[in-house]
Image 1 (cartoon, rainbow, N blue to C red):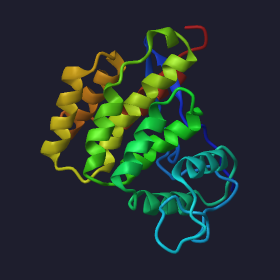
Image 2 (cartoon, rainbow, N blue to C red; image 1 turned 90 degrees about the vertical axis):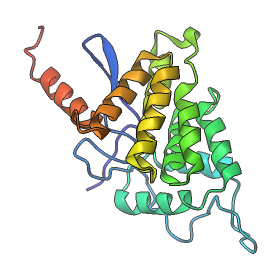
Image 3 (spheres, rainbow, N blue to C red; image 1 turned 180 degrees about the vertical axis):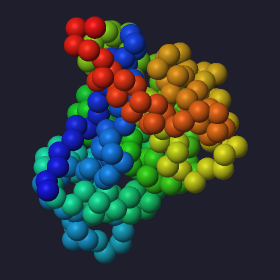
Length: 226
């Protein structure tokens, strides 16, 4: 069955905006849910340039192309995710740095920015740790708040916090990164997400995703008009 999900989602709960775990590539049930009208194959243009590859394209062009595909319906999300993860693991440091810039560029389309952030986390490279921390700590422009654009900026930074889980970090490294974010971030939603992930990593609380699902379920069970 073909599926389609939004690139990001935010929900107003108890006076705050909380990230729903319906990110680009996973639905609320935990199953892969990438949306693309075309399944990426080995023959698809790669953003990883190597000698002798005449069909390689530059990273910004590839990012724009793939984010457009991911906004459409597709049939095999698992294969799409696998291909993207494989390519992300081949990213060089300059490419990772470029993705960081794209993820924070207000002139870049939101789906493209979200994909750039996801690829940094999926690179599984040591340098990605610092880049995700940097993204999470960039202040949200006050002129964007309140409003949908401000909401997206907060969701993006919270997703950068969660992206640390995709890296091959020890529990100590993960917790140190989270404490660093908590101590330096001026965004309440970012620090809340980092706190939740820190407590989860210490076995003191359920994962942020489980907490999101519980909050959403509680909201949906509330009587209409209450």
